[in-house]
Each structure stands twice: as structure tokens, then as C-alpha cells.
Length: 213
Ligand code: INI
Image 1: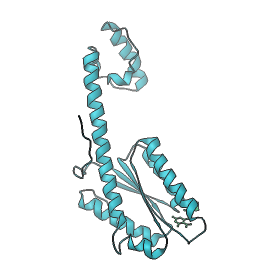
Image 2: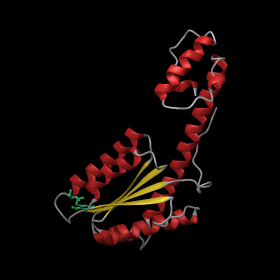
Image 3: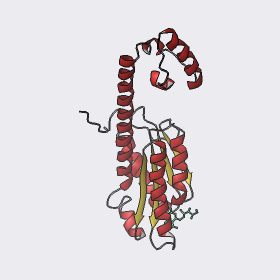
């Protein structure tokens, strides 16, 4: 049995993107401060001149998921944090914006396999929003914690899957270890590996080249 659970340590090598909606910036900037404070206290350098955290600004929450997906697709980040504030009553399209940003954020995570944190505050009014952005508590802190936990969990998950597949391949394919040094594009690897497999007496080529890594 295995247990997978994210931790909040070994954060020095993590890379994060924060996508920030400018709409309601009074609230969003407070969320960002909470987020940066949490990251800093957990060993991440949040400075914009640093290499660990990149900041991406968009006009409003509606635009957040699109850039979150782009950031996740780039494979540069261990997690993406979305920050925004959608406040009821400010414009009639609160419900559209809130629904789309929630759906879009989840889709970005599902489609890319990169954790995308839903740090979009929804509130009935400005007072309520500010209370959750620093006056009583700061949700930005929680969003950063969620990002650290998910980034760590995914790292564990991928390294465990990789270790398991190494174990499987070396048991079932004696020739595979002889090819573990192979580098190059997956296409190049395929042709070379097929030749090597043939010379090693392996005739079943149904194994994808990347599984031989
Ligand atoms: N954007 C927000 O981030 N919060 C809101 O409360 C909000 N309201 O209420 O309208 C909002 N609207 C703008 C929207 O996100 C887009 O930027 C705009 O519709 C252009 O696509």
C-alpha cells in the first residue's frame, strides 16, 4: 500500500506562476500579498526578479483561465495559482463571470495535469471580500498553501510512477537497461531502440519507446 500526501518542505526548487486579475484590484492585491507572505515563509522566493515565481496579469477574472492554461501547458511550473475577486452586484454579469472562471480553472488543471489553484474570491459585497482578503483572514495564504501541497503531491506521484515503470521494464525487458543511456527525440530513439532490441533478440515491439526509458 502506498500513501501519497503533499508536504510543505523542499520548496527551493519549485516554480510557480500566479495569474492575477486586475478587476477589483483593491481586494486582489491583498490576496496577492497573503499569497506571497505564505510562499516566503515556506522557503519560496516570491520576488518578481527571482526565478521561482512568475506573475501574469490579465484584465479580469474571466481572462484568468486562459492564461492559467497557457502557463500550465508551458511545463515551466509545478503549480499555477489563479487570483481574482468576483463581487456580486457590481455588474449584472457576476454569475457568468463566476461560473466561467470556476469551470475554466478546473478545465486547465484537468487538461494539463498541472495543479491550477482556484484562488478566485466570490463575495456578495466589497466588505465581505475585504474581510477575506486581510481584514479577518487572508484567503491568499490558503491558496498558496494549496499550491505548495499540490505541487509536492504531483512531484511524489510522478517520481513514484517513474520508479515503478523503471522497475517493471527492467524485469520484463532484459534489453531495456542496455538502452537506458539513449537520448534524443522520441522518434530517433524509436528507430535506434528497435535495432538494439532486434540485436538483443527481442521481437515484440509493442512496447512504446518512451516506456523503455
Ligand atoms: N471581473 C472580475 O474579476 N470580477 C468581477 O466582479 C467582475 N464583474 O463583476 O464584472 C469582472 N468582470 C470583468 C470580466 O472578468 C472580464 O474582464 C470582462 O468581461 C472582459 O472579458
